Length: 114
Length: 112
View: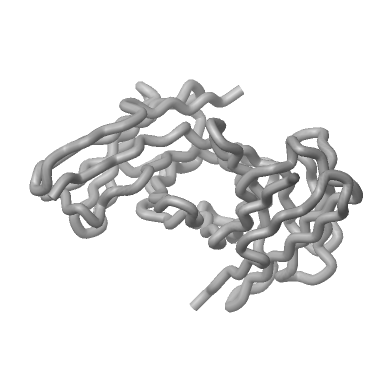
């Protein structure tokens, strides 16, 4: 059974700092890994999807890396801003035919202080 | 562009009452559809998924059921709600080929 762990559970940084969020998974036979952002009381916003054949994926100030063999992914946020404050979740899919049921980590709650 | 809608946004129901949450997707055809629940202090848990009309797979035994009467419509139901059904319910969709999964804004369900 796939298990996904995110460390740290919470992180508080001053504005402008670069930071790294960690995600680890126990079964390295994954199709891809997706990073999401969740604001309080809201749904999930997809940030980055990194395919199993990729090592990195970038979108603006965000960079996700994937190391399948070690079962790890990181989300790098450059020049953090107060608007980046949210819970960040990583998820990996379990395939069942054409469906991709996601297994989620418990998230990292990020607070960026102005 | 594709959009996903969930309603209602918030719902307060008494124990033992029925439930119907609806999710619709626009701008795509034949999506995979998913229902997740996010309970306080617990992570996101997949409840049901569907790869086509009338095709429902359940991930956990529970008091809930799902139906897909139309290609882009996914409904979560219960005949009698329990206190333990409280939580934040999220609908999601994706397509084949390793595309990202996209989520709706969720329904906050409180059982009294």
